[in-house]
Length: 605
Image (cartoon, rainbow, N blue to C red; front, side, top):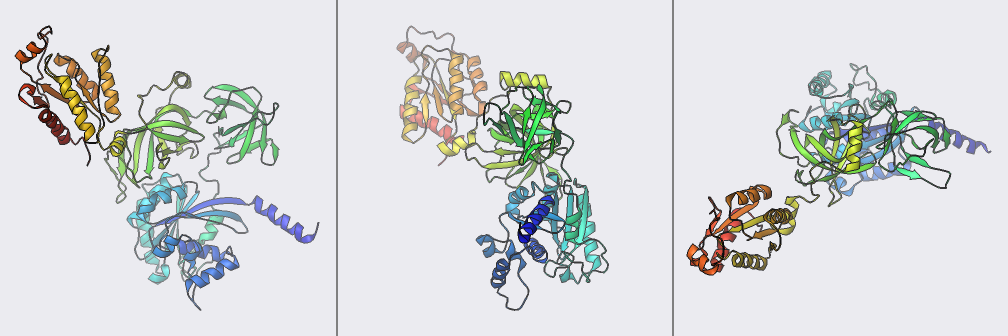
């Protein structure tokens, strides 16, 4: 083997053994994140010559300093607006460690992008403009980093060169941020006086801050524990795929979410609760005696166990929580607000289940980090909710295990990720109880994946039941079909329910189903007693129930239906509309009902 080739292999082997640290840059607009990252890449010699030359030309500075922000602001829109919109990932290494950094947006409009970039980080570096101090968006980003369980926060007080490197300015920012950090969950907060433009205390210590005797930003990144925040005690292995390359091999492949496992360890497969023992561990390079998070491996068990994607393998004496109901902190990522009347798809580890937000407890106010009552969450809101899942999950509290305590919500219609969540508290279920539910099906009330709001937007109307009541021979059916015809001509969706060979309870259930589907449902079948109509109103929904009294004179009704029973009829006490059909044209009667529907906001446009 030639010497150059040997040196390359030695270099690659050395690089492979280096620890990897993931960290994220956050902060407000124009605090200098992109410039600081560019300075860090430049001063660690992590920029290729052609990149450096391109940035020099783009900086349009013939004999001046480089615009370091151009190393990371890659989007054209960012170049034009001078702000970071998307999350820009950069990879570099030093002699001590490898790094993956994320430059996240600072503008409030892109908080969701910031949450995405910070979700896998061990360290967060938040920039504060020394001239402006701690801003609202600074608090918001720091709180999100805290929610995401990032253990270490570095506060880089930037642009110290613009305040003449005054120690008192740095101390004021440090004291102000320390008050904010008291409400957060960081293991430790570190403070650095820096100038991204000049390079002070970024890679090299600065002579301009003799009053500061701490490490540089790079020294901190090279020494902070890279596995901080990772749970290495609770073994959790969500199965991603079952490998069957031949009849003799059956392996369960996935990434170890937390903890360690070794050949011979006793394990339990969830949800079947089947015990077994690890027979072999196959890693990327071959057989292993043991493995730890976050390595991707294939486990082979001693027993023939029925396992599929979404199942979880754990230690026999160390189980996660099992349940369908839990509280969680959520960052809402979608422009469409949270809709508590619909179900979402909840993605947790390798399984996906239907879930619904049962209750919104509060929303965080970014101004003072206090809680406020809120009926829903909107774009970039952070709040505490209770979720009900249609199948039991196997999880841990997020503060204990970031991998099994995290989830995302997906809108089943748009396939858009609408929220990122962190499980905080739960109503744990007994394993046997959870298994019985899995076998029997969900005990939760079924909830559609299409909410009434979405149906209204699509159909231009809300579901309602128009319940026509009156004496036999009053003309209810003529009015029902005339109303249906008029609604159809107006471009509305309506349907008259035909009660042939059905009882009142069955027809009421059918009316509710049609109303839930967004139709204007017209019912004219006999309901002489007030109690029957009250039952229908309660079942369908009082707000969507329009009672119409067809008040035709009894004499005319008896003339039309001499053989009918007139003794059991109870006139409505407070109908929404009363129509004397013997003294009114049918078209005018239809118009009265339409006016009532319009008054209730039944239609759009």
